[in-house]
Image 1: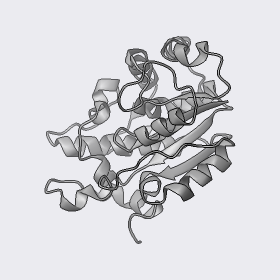
Image 2: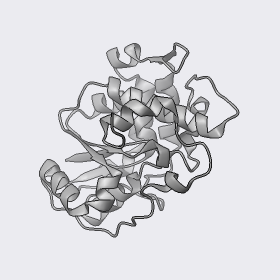
Image 3: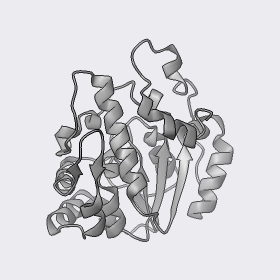
Image 4: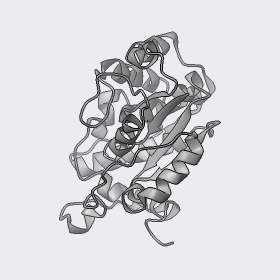
Length: 239
């Protein structure tokens, strides 16, 4: 059984990684404080390999038709194999991994691991873009976009790209969407859903409440018009 978490950096994915580790799921080694499998360089290179086949149309629109239609390249397979070697070298009944950059290559990860369990981790983007992350500048991963001098806007565009990519990818055989806020505020109910989905008992870890709604006291730019559709879809905003 294989589990992975799909979600942008600073979406709260560390909570899921720590929960899985505490539940006896082998998440590879070593892990950093965020529960990411490291070193990450092969995953970063895999992201750049994937990006060669994504076309930027301009206006925050990308054409994913090539990556969705084609099989992962041999170089991509080799890079992911190297990155995940510690996940598969151990004889564990339940294993998985977490690193936010997996989201940047989600369609090909799904093709490599069609029987995996995919946990789509969602967070209010107005909170998610308040802090810096490796994926803030899509150019670092070979992805074209209209880069600006506004760091928050670049982060927001990175969020939009990743949401559009996951939305464009056909549903996996086994997938579930989980809101970070529900994990924080309704942990028992949320873990019950996940236990039913995964078929394994999950540990209860301590969840801090202060990360929810941080944007409400933020004085910088944190809301963008292209957030609106997703905010409504996932219950953060009324239509």
